Structures are given as C-alpha cells and as structure tokens.
Amino acid sequence: MVVAFILGGASWGVKYGLGGIWYGFACGLGLLLLGLTLAKPMRALALYTVADVLEIRFKSKALRLLAAILSLLALIGILGAQVWAASAVFEAIGLPGTTGAIFATIIFIAYTAFSGLWAVALTDFVQIILGSIGVLIAVILGLNKIGGFEGLKVALSELPNLPQTPEKYFNFMSLGPSLLALTLIATVMYTLIGQDFYQRLFAAKDEKTARLGAIYSGILLMALSLLPALAGMLALTLSDNPQLVINSPKTAIPKLVITVFGEGIGAIFVGAILAAIMSTADSLLSAATSHVVKDFYQRFISPEAGDKVLLRLSVMTTIGIGISALVVALTVKGIIELLIYSYDIYTSGVFVPLLLGVYWKRATKEGALAGMIAGLSVAILGISGVLSFRYWEYIYVSSAFISAIVMIVFSLITKPEPIEEDFKKSFPF
Image 1: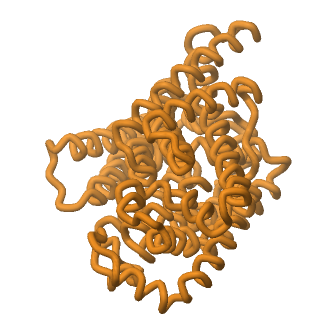
Image 2: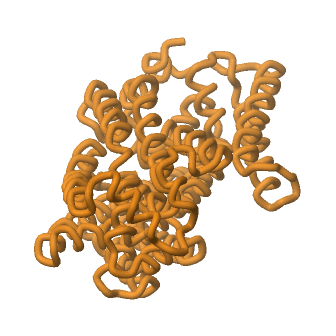
Image 3: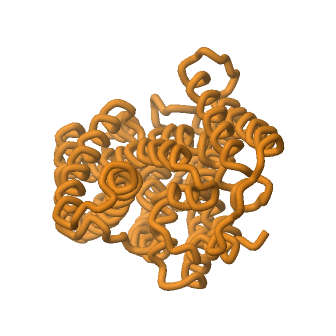
C-alpha cells in the first residue's frame, strides 16, 4: 500500500495533477475504518488468513477454498503492482522497464525466501513515515526551486503534449466521477478485507496494537495524500525531458528525488523507497504463500505434512507466485490500475460474506456461499463484457449489491448453525 501511495500517487499526479490524491486518501480512509471496526476483534481470533475466519464462522470448506482462491488471485495482482513499482526505480537509474521488472521479481523471491516465508513486513505506520520523509523534503525543495505554486502553474502551462489541460492539473476532481468513485469504493472495500492487511493484524502484539496501528496509519495516509500528487507534477515540470516522464509516469518519484537532491543523496532516498517496496513485496508473497500452504495444502491435501515438506512447498510457491506477478505486471503496466483490478475480483466475492458473517447472527453458510458465487459471477460477466455497464465502478457496486441480496435471501430460507464460542467472544452478536 505504501509503495502504491507514493509511486502510484505520483504517477497519477503526472496524469491528473491534484486529482492523483484520491488513491492515497482512499487507502487511509480504509485503514481508519478497519481500525475502528474489524481490527480489534479480528486480532482476537489470532488466525492466519481471511479464509480461516470464514471457515470458522460458517463451518464450510468450500467457502474457505473459494475465498482463498480469490484472495490469492488478488495478491498476485497486487504483487504485480510492486514489481512495476520496483521497475520504476530501476528505470529511473538507467535499467529498461522490462529488464527492471524481471530483476525486481528475482530480488523479491530471493528476499522473501531469505527473510523467512512467514515473516511479516514492517507495520504500515513505520513504512508510511520512512517512505514519506524523502518525498516531503523533495516536494518542498521542488516547490522552492520552481517558484512555489504560481511557478508550478506557469511551468505546466508552458509544457506541450500534457495528458490533460494545464488548468485541470489543479482540479481535485480531474479524475472524473467514474474513476474517482471506483478508486474510493474499490480501495476502501479491499482494505477492510484484504489478506495483506489481516496478516499484519494477526501478527500484531495484541488487539490494542492492531487497532491503533490501523487508525494511526489511516489518519497519516489521508493527511499525506497530497504529497505524491504534487511530486508527480513537480517531476514533470522540473525534468529536462518532460515527455519521458509522461511516457513513463511511474518513474516520477525517483526522478524528482534525484533532480532535487543530486545523484549522491538522491540515491540514498531512492534506496529507501526500494527498501519499502521490498518490505511490502515480502509481506505480499508471505500472504499469498500462506493461502497455498495453509488453505490449500494443509487443509485439503496433507494435514499432517512435516516442516520440511511445508518449507519446500513454500519455496516453490514463492517462485511460482513471483513469476505470475511478473507476467501480470508486464501485461497491465500500471500500478494503481493493477491494484484496482485486483481489488475488484476479490471483494466482489468476499466482502459481503465476511462483513455479514461477522455482524449478522442469522447469516448461514448456504447464504454466504451463494452470495459469494453471485457477486463473483456479476463481476466476471461485467469484466468480460457479457453484462454492459456504463462505468466500471457499476460492475463493482453491482457485484456487492447482488451478493448482499442473494446472501440475505438464502440465509433467511436456510437454518443457521451454532457459532463457535471463540468467534462469539471476538464478535459478540
């Protein structure tokens, strides 16, 4: 998330100007809501995956399996965004984009295997602070160099071939209502149920730490969401070759940092950004591997598997997921776009069953499974073009809406099973 907040937000700053704040703001809002609602009770369960939570609540192996598959697909897409982000750093220092993406993938796989497959990355709060310090200083120095906001306006007005008119760069709504709504809805919904977020919650010291970590990270992200967008605009105007930045907006942050700090100090900050990407990628690979090992292999194939077998499987899984993420990254070639597409597939099936499951006592496993299948079906039909929607976010909203209706109806006509005591202690109905 932090990497997307910094590099993805700057990339959108190049394209949309101040309208590029909304992904970072949505991430922060989602974390804040997570901290205020689900963080504490979910940490109290002390499980491994979101699929674990669904199986305990509904006593359904099929529900767990389908949720794990959707989460795994989403994590591969999100990891693909990290690959594309790391390639931006390498491209900024002279390594071509595709070569940089391949090199980044190799590093991710080696880094995760070396640090331990079950290791969890630094907390979001620490990552946000470390990642934002360099960007904050770079923005301040960049604004001073160009003559403040007025100088920025003048510089933009003099650039040819901009993705949009110079005036729109100072409009917070420059994304347009469709993309803005999609960004807010998709990002907030995923943040509330994403395995990569829950892995941090489950690894927190206690319930209070999980809750406060999510709240503080969310508030900080919303407060800092303007910085990456400004950084993208400054990278565009301060560049010796603005067209290169327009053609490859993902390189905006590394190029700005090197421009304002010089190659020496700039390299230190670029290295810090790369370290944050590595930390995030490690967490994502660990989360994805946990699905394969815990939710698939141990749960359905070999419950008694020994540590050596699990370690071997973990390494093989890490390599396979890393390669899959590289393929996805090279196919989509957009940090925030990759993230939003990944959120869509996962949340269309999992969001409603999880939330109704923890907040509605009458929810049944039949209702949850039917709702998950219905929501996912609407999303697949919309993405494939079988169902026609005017705007992309209608696919997303419609999936959740249909999922909720189907789950409620099927739950009301089927008999609920007793809820486990551990679950009731975490989520008192």
